[in-house]
Amino acid sequence: MSTELTWLGHSCFAICTEGCNLLVDPFLDDSPTAPLKADEIAADFVLLTHGHFDHVADAAAIATRTGATVVANFEIGEWLKGQGVAEENVVAMNTGGSAELAFGRAKMTLAHHSSGLPDGSYGGSAGGYILDLKGKRVYLAGDTSLFLDMKLYGMTGLDLAVLPIGDLFTMGPDDSIEAIKMLNPRQVVPCHYGTWPPISQDASAWADRVRSHTAAEPVVLAPGEKLRL
Ligand code: NI
Ligand code: MN
Image: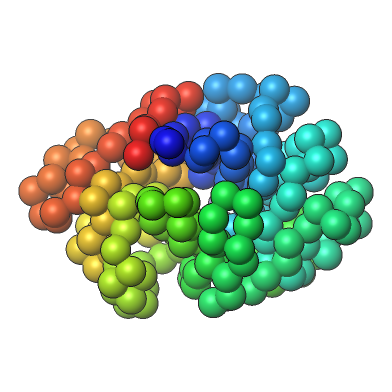
C-alpha cells in the first residue's frame, strides 16, 4: 500500500494513504498558487496546524461539504463548530497529545508561531504534526521558527519532513538547513514559499544546499505535483 503526498501550494497538502484522503491546511480558493479549488477536493480528514487564514481559509467549507473529520487544537476545534462543522466531526487536541485515527496516529507538535483566527478569535497555540501512516513517519512542521526540540522529533526516525522555507513569517532557508540536520529525515519537502513576493525563495538553490549540508534528499514539488513515499 502506498502513501502519496501532493503539494497544493503554500502549506496545503493532500496526503492519500491506503485510500484515506488527508488534507492539511486548506488554503485553495484565495491562494495564488493552488492548482484546484476548495469544492474540487476530496477529504476524509482535514488537519490544521494553526488559525491563520492561509491555513484554515477553506477548512469549514470543505469539512461541511465532505463530512471530513477536522483535527485541530482545542480552540480552533471550538471555532470550527461555530462555523457549522458538526461536533462529531471535530477532533480537538493540544501540543504533545496524540490521537489514533483511521489513517494512523497523529501527534501534535510544538511550533513557534502565532495562531489568531481570521475573525479575531483566539486560535490557541500554533503546532505541527508527526503522522504515523502505517509504516511511514511524516513530520509536518507547520509555520514555525527553528527550535532545538526538533532534535527530539528527529530521534523518532522520520521518512519525510515538510518544512517552511519562505522566511519573514517562518524559518527561512538558512534555519531550515539546521532544522534538517536535527530532524534527519530521509526526504524533505519545502513549503510556505513562493505564494507571494515577500516569501519568494529559490527552491533549487535551497535543494543544492540540502544536498551538500545534510543527509536528506530534498524533493521540490510544483503545485499539483506528487511525491510517492
Ligand atoms: Ni501562520
Ligand atoms: Mn502561514
